[in-house]
Length: 112
Image 1 (cartoon, rainbow, N blue to C red):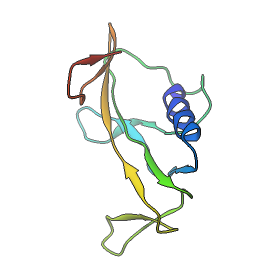
Image 2 (cartoon, rainbow, N blue to C red):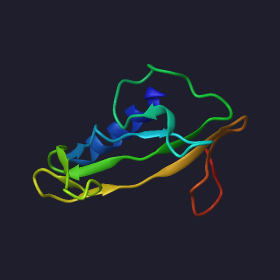
Image 3 (cartoon, helix red, strand yellow):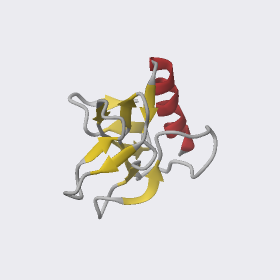
Image 4 (cartoon, rainbow, N blue to C red):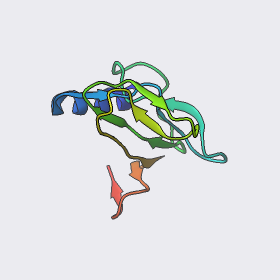
């Protein structure tokens, strides 16, 4: 599982001066919207649980220009960066199949 977070982190680091929000991570998805396991967007490769056929994961990095500190507004929902710089949050849902990962949210059928 940590290989996913490590890969996300390496892409973000290579892109330049961006922060990775650590308070919000991806997650398993299935009979409930948010399930175990958590899927961080950072970490060391080769650690944590292994992917298994039948798993579905929401991989959802939140990346900020500059720092990675965030806060929640008084509405209890809106997340903003502490330094008032721009941020982006996106998600793909990936199913682990016998034939490999399948990106369920891709515009076209993508099997990695």
